[in-house]
Image (tube, rainbow, N blue to C red; front, side, top):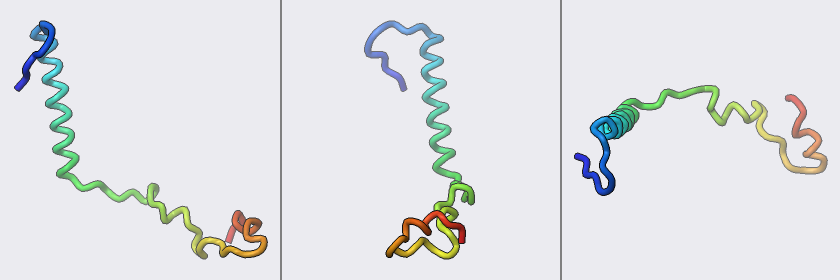
Length: 68
């Protein structure tokens, strides 16, 4: 239900506003129903090297960029 507080919108403007509100409500309800698919490209674990992160110690900054 809409209530116009100011102005005098045309029927076309009211229809456009209603269409936007309905579209956003439908998108929000469908997003809440469907679980998000797991995307391996966005997985944060991909950024950690297989051997783990370099251990702190003398000259650790040098080996931080070396391939393992």
